[in-house]
Length: 78
Image (cartoon, rainbow, N blue to C red):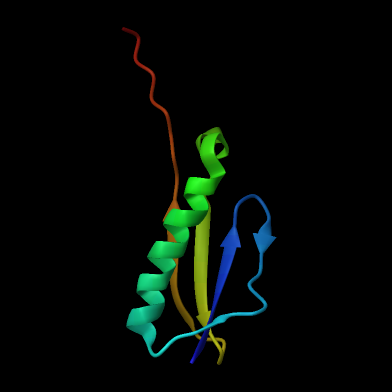
């Protein structure tokens, strides 16, 4: 089955190609791996606020999952 990994990081980036995977479990694992790689590429931009998300949809249009990531730097008065 083909899965599409759509990303929203201030703008919607739609995956128009998709990735062929055997099942939902493989799509979940791919979502985690791809998210880690993409967020690593963001560097400092990740810490500028907002929520980064990845939505996984299969070829039938069924939404499988959404991952949300938010980085927030907390500064103390010390």
